Every structure is written in structure tokens, then in C-alpha cells.
Image (cartoon, rainbow, N blue to C red):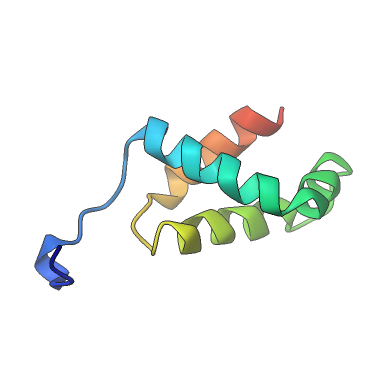
Length: 72
């Protein structure tokens, strides 16, 4: 697989992003606890971690939406 910038696609698949989100949540239980306690920035931290896990390819708007859906 080429590392060429032109071949990098943005991930918009909710299914793919959701699976990455579950992987990140599994590794970050404290962020889940913080989010549920209403800690400012907990969701932003999780969005950042999912974005990083996707190598910067996942759409942050969809990441946020999927995390909120999973964590409600």
C-alpha cells in the first residue's frame, strides 16, 4: 500500500470509525469515567485518540457523533 498523500482517503464510514472508537475506549476507561462525570475535555481527548488511531484519516465530526452515541 502506498504512503502517497494523494492515496490517503478520509474515513467517513461510521462502521469503521465505530470499531476504532471501541478499540480506543477499551484502552481508556478513565476518559469514559471522566466523560460520564461531565469533565470538560474528556470527549475532546477521546476524539483526539480516535483520530490518532485512524492515522489522522477519520472525520472528526463523525468521530464525535459516534463517541456520543456509544457513551450515552
